[in-house]
Length: 293
Image 1: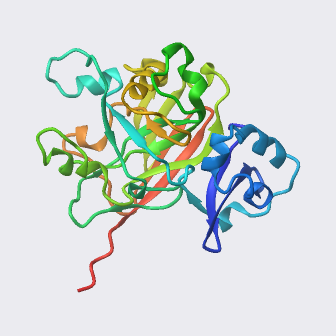
Image 2: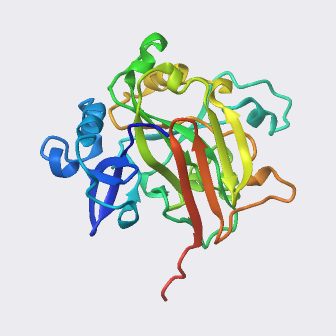
């Protein structure tokens, strides 16, 4: 387990941030809130390590079972998701095409994500809620036209994503997947941020996804078609990356849609996304509440 874990959470209806320890959570917003109202400001200031080191001097303020986990980065300007970024995932399409020349990508809204231990919501509009376990990099230093050689210097932290997808809705349109990727509360981010230190932290780590304890996805980040340096360089060509931007880097083969018959998520299921040195992102599933006429 990573030694530094910085999370956003709510307690008593108030959103805060703190350091996760084996005994609970140290409330850092109580100590640093004037300088960094949220983790997004702390990320921009390059202060994550400082926060973690300060927390080591304090006893926990809250038990973990007393808090509600939130997606780690509050109100990110951009959540950029990369599609088809593992070789076996490309082969799933059975179109005979080699690996793509450029990455596929799409944007997601913050509202489409919940935090760790919160349930994903299967919408009334579709029964085809699917899982996609992914490693996430969070930008710490703004930049445009970032060179690959300097790209990793712009990473502040890593976290995890279950990039939940409504499969039939991603096929509604001819060219885009936006609607199937943005249903409210269908994906998750978390459980916390692990401050980024060096390339070995992310270059070849195992990423797995389990559904009800059964391993469905299992791959290593060293096999990414488009690596972390390239993605930051490429994305920063068309948009300015800013502190707190979230890049969801792609999912391995093994999503539920690829089984015959497909194995979509249903209420009561538990999905766990795990990566070496990061942790485990866990979520259940519930149905969307019926409308009140």
